[in-house]
Length: 282
Image (tube, rainbow, N blue to C red; front, side, top):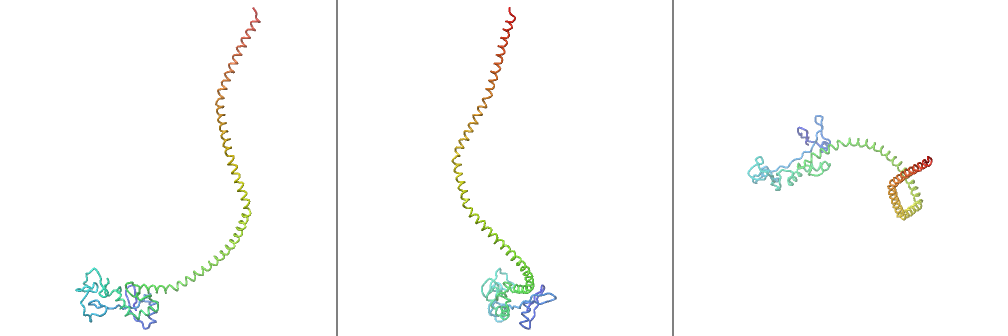
């Protein structure tokens, strides 16, 4: 069992599987703070001489090879290659990497008892959760711990929220019932209006026919109206011409009047002179 703190890791042994599971699920308190507990996962050891996963250095008869690039002639501490190569599967990773499927199978095998417990308790979803290539074991246990811690709080919050929502739902149901009654009465009113419309449909048809006949009469008399309008315009034009001729006629009449008055005055004077001459005698 490994206890992970912010500064260091502690290892401890559990005396029973029940204690092991309890600590995994509930963490452990150190210095007043809960610390995450992880199961101890053992890494498979490769041969430090050639990198093989099938034997150790004391049993090795192969040529010395770099554990990083699989090339001979130097150790991993002296490796200057810009690539990685696994001597066991020829893939692009080191021979002790969890990315190597053969190495992963060895790791599963030596941790099979711990894995069976973790899998049986649903603490991991698959064997791959213990591989460092995903860092999924730490995430999985963090998730489980947070989930267990939050379960109680969530239940309390959910229950309080549900009570509020139930009360609101009752109000909503009551309003829906009222709206339903209103809609029902509105539907009856709409049906009554629809019946009235159907009853007056014949009157509407009569009005439509009358409007159609009126439109036809208007179309028939429209040419006559246009002719009358044209005559009126011509008459107005004639009046304007007559109006323009009136001032000269008036001027002519005025001249004739003046001439008549002057002529009459001259005749009168002449006649008076003749009378005076007769009266005065020779």
